[in-house]
Image (cartoon, rainbow, N blue to C red; front, side):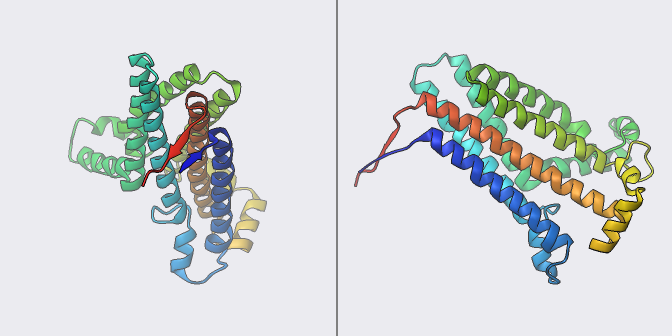
Length: 264
């Protein structure tokens, strides 16, 4: 039996389905979790987009793993076509990067290494002087330079490999959303009395305070931080959706006429 796969149509469906799931989970967090549509704590935690054990976290890790798998398939396809070895190695680097991203998201590696680094710094390690002046999470000092370098490599490499304007726009938007997510994470890690903390300023607006207390029975600051985390997780998930779509579109060009044969 032989099955034909329209990869370009598949890419469009991946974008639509993943975006619908991500938006739905954010809406469910707003109503079911924070809006207390359910009074059962276990149900609220399931839809809490700011938790590591919620549905959005699981979806994001799974999606990242599929991006890595797609990149590996593209690498094999490029190698089979006799593509220049340096370009094949570039695809392999991207595959390894997204494998790491999936592992990191699933096991929360950067958060835990950041916590360990903070603990070592408090015991007098060389990193202590750096962390003493850095106002946000410790993981950013350790991992952000590496993530920034790999993010720039991803943008430049895919910009060169993807010849069409749509693919490039998807990559640019995806990397841009990841940068926004890191910026939001930086703000969330600031102390409440830090002058750069935007949530203190926003919480001071009377309308914000009145709405959060009437709708959620929470302080405006707590509500703003929660929804910032929710939007941050959404931005990361949607960024991976955009990058996945761009890679699938590229594969559609390089593997045109793909047929899958099942032999029994």
